[in-house]
Image 1 (cartoon, rainbow, N blue to C red):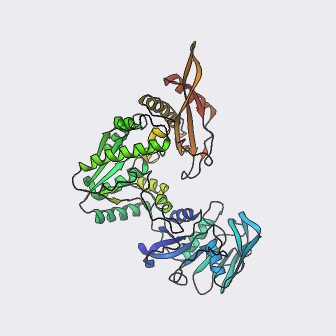
Image 2: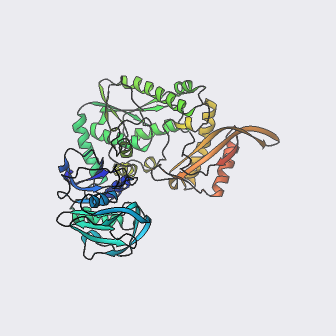
Image 3: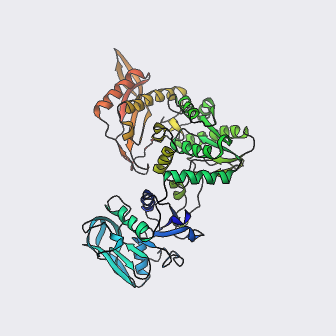
Length: 511
């Protein structure tokens, strides 16, 4: 299947990940590589896409890819910067644009009977995002499409399978963008659409069997989607040689430790639950600074995990639920550091004394693909639909210092809120929800008595990847009911507020 891969060369565009997402929606496997770090074996790729870039091809800082083994030898699609690069350095002319070529535009001309524009008609909306424009096409180029403001919106080079566009087919606003990518990859480049969740499972399991043999693997489970799907894939490959450790840091949701352990038991996984609540709370005592709290939790986690891993004789590997966006973010398009284990992962920044090799079965797929892979393996829908939950747990939802009593209060509040969302059929409309315990007491009246108790904030956001998020407009009746239930049932809280901030400028979590 390898020869049906697509290579995306990244020039630093904010949309590069989106190109990959769209290609994979066509059931075609693709990989993103920095423009200046081409993969060693280009034979594995059947087509190449050049991404956009914030840099101008006319500047001294223009990014120069080595296309000697690609251009004219493989089908090539150049998007935005790529299209301008081919024009500028192959006899065309790129100049600063007089009109603001940003936002929605419509195709006003399409060359007839071009496979590239098959099933796309004049008037189709496209998304522009560039300050330079191609004034003259490069040598041997044929104009394929124009908009009212951009004459050279698309062209191809005669004598080679090279196509170029000045708009972004990958963004949602380009209505026929997916069709255009399909026309190029399937009809022109002849790439097979064979990459499905099932094929990913088969290939990954076979690869893990070969890589791991009879070795033992340790995996830190978090109860979340990524670590669970990684565990099931590994279990399919190596069975009981996979040793899962689920640590209770005392900062999980109410009953989560026992509930999740039960769920894992039903899946046949080899899981050991370790209740280290007291150890974490002791380490957190007196700490209020968010970063200090995160570091303390990370340190204890590593200690606990190391104690447990050492009890597994001959463990050779540490498995992690790293997913593709983490890998891409840690390899910058302008030649930054190579992939590193991010500190927010289940096992953050492993110390040198843990002499384990790392295995990451999900490192080449996106979050939505992780869910689809999980579904194809029959993992419970409820588990796959779980909202993301921060690694440090409730510690970063309790502003200020952490005590067992504050954790109890927040667990109760969170349970009312999350269960309420589920009962009202709202849970799946929300990307992430949770409650925050504020370091504020306010005056209230309960019965005939004045109270001076805690304030909690409720937060619910919608998002696709957590990079940006909008607050969810939950029905007033739901908020009213939830607020009453919290104040009447959770001792220590007398006021509830709802957070209506979007990201940016706010973040999803408060700390």
